[in-house]
Length: 257
Image (cartoon, rainbow, N blue to C red):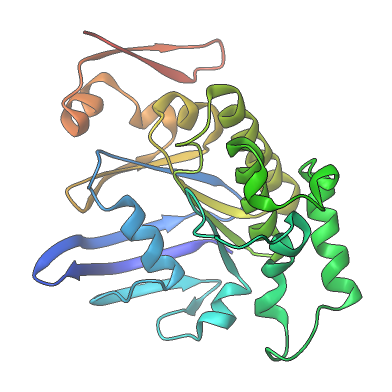
């Protein structure tokens, strides 16, 4: 179940943000979305998720057009790990992660089933969070709470996992740990993952494909070694950099000051 985007356009008022986006995001791969600040990366994710209503175009998942679908039905298939949560309550980690089962309840009056609790606990265990089950979610460190957000998203049992700058508030160690876990999930569960990232070297390490955006348009799509070139980095970021490759051919960027 990949994601196909056809002729997607979106505007805030009269300001055009996304300009005729056409993409084929492959099933069971980890795809990174790169580009300068304000180029439309997060807005693009929100259009896939249905948070924002596009002006025109289609988002197709598993040969089904998801434009106009009820959000509850979409949430059974697509989940989001945001940069941060607006959570302001004293929910425990366990209860917070269980919220991922809400789209699967028959009605808002139904309680969680044994199966719902089992799925949540399996994801807590998978992400090494079981020891925090009874802790107030907001009391955790940034890296721990980011894993809780991932556990909640996985508890939805999605086929498509979206991540909006998931490492922006993390130190390098926690950023590597989080993306490595996502990468393993993609391989083990055959999830299609799409992540907005700013760190080009982390994107090179963990992504199968990269999408490069600028000014609301997709300029390039391909493997990291095809996209992370000195010429493209200068064109998109106006960045002078040296690109080196490791023994596996993965490119890494050294900015030239």
